Image 1 (cartoon, rainbow, N blue to C red):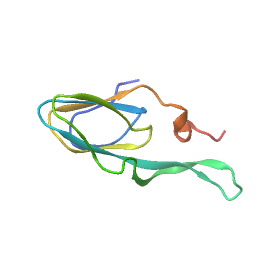
Image 2 (image 1 turned 135 degrees about the vertical axis):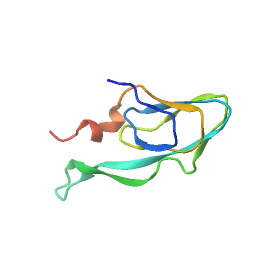
Image 3 (image 1 turned 60 degrees about the vertical axis):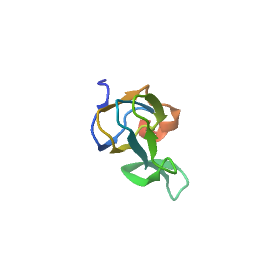
Length: 109
C-alpha cells in the first residue's frame, strides 16, 4: 500500500488513524472533518453508509502546529484531513486502520 503524503493546503480523505505533520518555518493549521460511515437501519441493525456524509469537526477548534516541529494527531480512517493554512510542510499517514474504523472495514457481511 502506498504511503499517503500531503504537502499543500487541501481537504483529503485519510487512509490511516494518525497523521504526522512536520513543519518548517511556518505554522500549519488543520481540522478533521468527520464523516458518517455507518447508520442504524429501521430494524435496529447497523449497516454501512453508501456514501460518506460529513457530520462536523472532530476537534472543537482548528489545531495549529508550530513551525519547526513534528507532531502526531488522530484523524481516523475515512475522515477528511483539512489543511487550512501553511506552507513548506509534510503530512504523512501513520499506522493502519483500527477497530475504531469498523464502518470503513465493513461491519455488515
